[in-house]
Image (cartoon, rainbow, N blue to C red; front, side, top):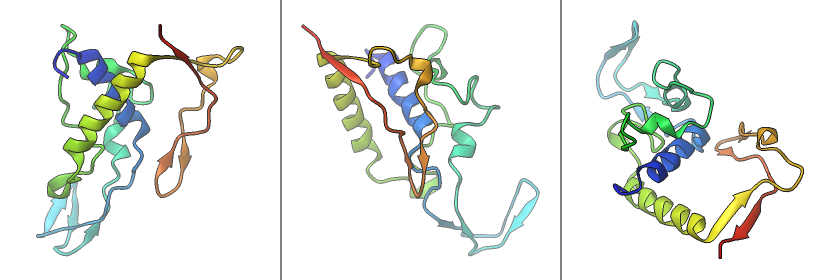
Length: 151
């Protein structure tokens, strides 16, 4: 990943924007806490809304746009962002996060190495709906796509 910072940034930005599990798993507070002026009693069930962080305008320059530069410094090197948490938050973060990151990188780079992806003839990239279909998970809207084998 270190030698492909833009690719890594694209993968992270895809995860940030797609956010397939906008409501994380429920957590329970382990002690009384005051958060943003609100008192939360020990034992309260809390459901983190990851979208509120992944699309927070105070954290992201272009929160609702696909912008891989969110994860690149001025020299084009990959940077980690504290506000990037697609695998949940807190001590109960997804156990499979490192495996998922590795598989995403391998799958994505293998596809890009073998294919060039475009919209179908007559369809503009601006016409693609990136909002998704909301349910328990956020699913991508159906799209037609052309995968052209690289020679």
